[in-house]
Figure 1 (cartoon, helix red, strand yellow):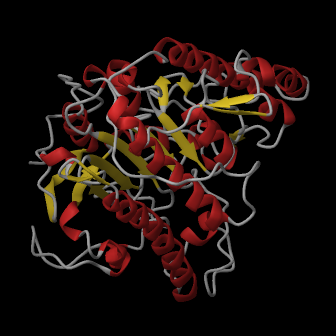
Figure 2 (tube, rainbow, N blue to C red):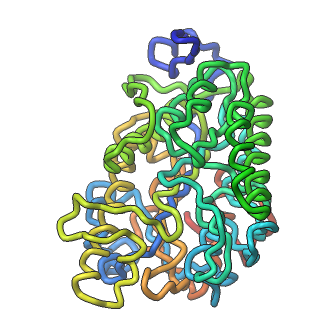
Figure 3 (spheres, one colour):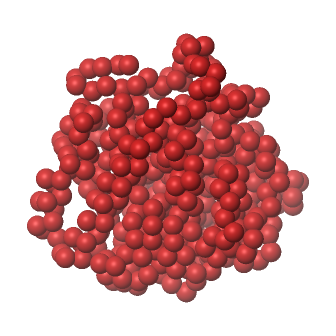
Length: 447
């Protein structure tokens, strides 16, 4: 244990601790991890699609960062979420990406995404095997209000990938230090509501007191917010806060001894400083490293990671020639200059995920690596940011699923195959079998 400033942090499971672990407290083989990485605004089609078929494909320009681990990725083609057809280009498509349901158009008072996300289905059944049933990460704070110009959808939809039930999102953490502390606290703090105010003192103070619910810590701020927002927004806030309480309770019930996988070797990661790094590149680096640490220490086996929210306003000033924000540039209208900026943003974000995959591949465990013992789905809810098309979604599965996935190929399904067939395949590998899920028509064959 490390103690100081009123906080108590449990150290990661390290090599020196491994010999002392009782045999009945250790797993016999590395666990399988599942994570979903959502990127908004589509891809540059010509730079994404590779040449060649099956295992004889060449990495396209956008996929060049996967060089060296090409044999550990699978390109999934012709998958779709048909229940998002003909609707707004962004807001309803984000939650549907992980459950294929019909997202209800509303003014914010009757949120309904039409399903439970695949990660939460798994977490409900096997999440008690790890200290954290699931781990939700992202970069952008939650949006409130309704996008009347975008079809009258609550913007809350576009801020959450993970949904505990059709009416309740699972909040994502966007502050590196708070995400790090969730891994190693001696008692549950639950997902911190940093989406409202990432640097609020109450959140920081909550991490110093093990006996204080984070929801209690932010309740004063919540009451202040309630007095300044509309009735519809108050309903959304209540639902959001209730989701925090529900996850806190679930975490409290699962913070008990479990069989853990203990890796040999070291994983050196200092605790991040407070707040959000001003440089987005550093923010990205820290959050990916924290997730790698979560998998390495077997703190969780299920995660969602929002690389950007719907209609993301993130900017990338370090990319040469990129002068506008992400969503604006995605509406390129085939203008050569705008399309060039779009390609640079897309390729940079793909490269960050690829770098994470390379990082996991360097973490050796058992007879392979953490990447070998993972199934990591990366992709978008639309194919092209300009057209908002939903057929043949850009999807890439990294990892070998602990030997259950035949990777290193293009897996071309029949046109309009439900993406939910893929979700069922990933669930089954995690030991969660469902006769149906969303609009599934079967189980995608990945072996």
